[in-house]
Length: 124
Image (tube, rainbow, N blue to C red; front, side, top):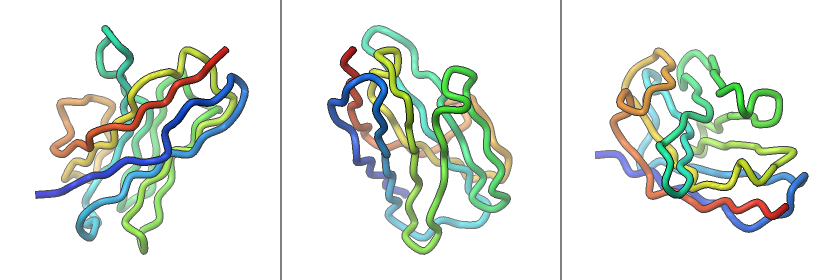
């Protein structure tokens, strides 16, 4: 079993930046892929970004491309999401996810483990 714990969410003003963190409970294996999703009230869970722990390859949703950056610190077993130029459209619960495969996917069903999420609220 893998535990994922997100942190870093909060209330910020539009145009500012925020960095989310996701810490894993055990050593991340080289075959893992980690991802960030978000879910706004009454909406489906949307893909945000993903990163192959082994290859370092990344994928981003069009809505965040150029504004968000996903990265990892293997020594700390931590995944990050740097979010810049935030807008009210970015308001959601952000969830960290992990999947036991090298390939990156933007499909939520492809992830095996999920964190509880951290709320990000952007005021305009």
